Image (cartoon, rainbow, N blue to C red; front, side):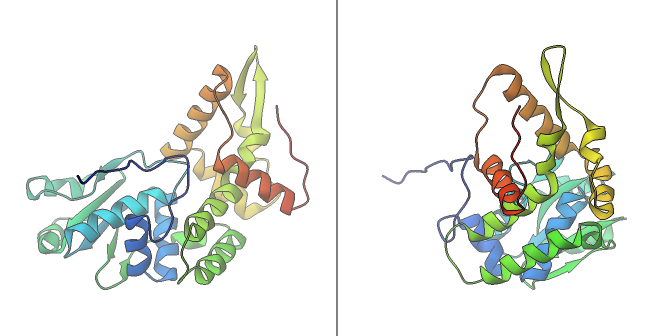
Length: 250
């Protein structure tokens, strides 16, 4: 009998085993993948379109997974039903998959500040320059790693994005403080970064919903004694060791 094995949310997706990630990597070039990632990081309104429903759902799910270990916190519709087309005019961030047969109707709406990725044609339209808002050293490293992994199997693509997440947000560990017996997050310490470009990015990031949810979940684990080790924490430690910095734990 056919059966479904739920993916392990604590491990990285691999190619070709993860159909979602495989479809995204096959459909998009590295440059567009970088722009999509930047738009996800800045919680934009994002429409993904394709003429094939299976490809559409796979690419929407894979796009969301680029933020791992964080999770998209806003409107999330892998395939938009025609009767919900007005959701595309929502004033808040969203990640929505739209079948290509509906795109003319969608575009006829008064869409403002929307990023549109056409998976079939590997084209991305954006009114923003989001990639310039991500620290250039992080972007350069991610671009290099993705180009090396373009035809490779395994978890290399997922690990490249995980490394970027660790470089961008791994400093949260140094901002954990003890207050009245509980562990808390000190935003001021987190923003006290020596790189101006990183500081500018983080000043915006602390207000994003996916980051707030991530910090809340980490604090909940720490304050209830739950298991704290995972692939993201391992990646942060690896980044610190590579940079020759000491690893601090509470």
